[in-house]
Length: 450
Image 1 (cartoon, rainbow, N blue to C red):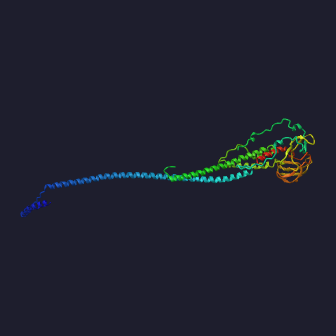
Image 2 (cartoon, helix red, strand yellow; image 1 turned 45 degrees about the horizontal axis):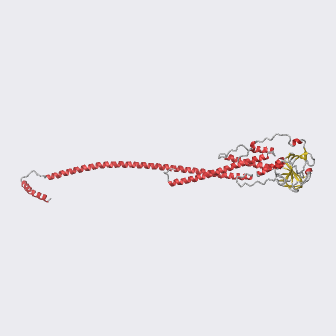
Image 3 (cartoon, one colour; image 1 turned 30 degrees about the vertical axis):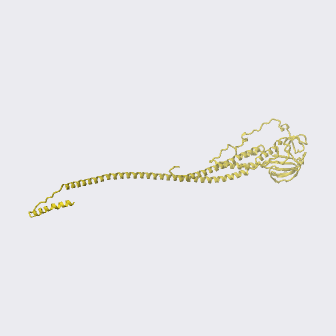
């Protein structure tokens, strides 16, 4: 630069001289000279400027493409995120809807369980009352069934036999027989027809859900299912209890009617007609429970009525101990020595042994009565009358009301008697009936805890 400046100053001196010399001559033009280096520098500067402008333009063009591409990618990403968000929102709505449906379903099930539980409580109260009423008439469903009263020490086979070896304790009034052969049963008779049916005894969730919520819901449903299972089991037990009561009660009624059929056929037929029992037994179901309950209650009422009637029949023993010395039917009269009809049963017993009524009733007479000696006559329900003869002592009077098992006298040998014994008769419409059939029925009824 110093050299350049020096050169420039050196060149200026002649020019100044020239200029000054030409001032006088009024010079009209100025001449400049440019070195090659200056041209080269200028050209380089133009090239550099051109390259800069071109680079800048290219940069902006490339930058625009990059921005457009980045914008398109960003837009696509936003759209993808939006789709994902929409899917998540739809899934959340779906899960919410399912939870609402599940909650509503559980609520409905809970309400159903509460309703069934309320119905079951009412049903259990009804069944408990039914069981209590069944036990009051001798129908027990548990294993602690009380034992029936002890059977009387009376052999039913002896009741049908004629005591031919013991003549020391017989007596009573005799009715002469017009047709001895027929009375002895030597003529062939038609067998009694029996209905075989009457002898038959009645037979006795999605993984997208919250795991904790899923576990909680599973536990709730399991608890709900357990409650429903318990209710169903208790429901079955209650219906089974009604079923058992119905079967046992109707079977007991049938047993009583069969037992009393031979001693009171007319009464038995009336009881059957009024009871309307029998027919095939339909198993209990939820739909027929009220009907089955009504049938069980009806059976219990019928059993109570049948027992009430049966217990008023003269079926008890008149003496606690004593053998049969003379049965009902034709025999040789010990005093007349002729075939005669013995209208009762003679119980050989010690003198003074207690005599009891065989059914509730009213005393018709308590006095001496001819060949019967001291006798008590009692009127019972359904037209039956019992006689207790040859007594040594009387404990009742005419018009007294007595119950089955009440003391009415003591064994003696008054009247037509060969020794201490009790002559016992059962009559209806003044016609004698075989006491053996009544006593045998009494034994069977005792087995039924009547």
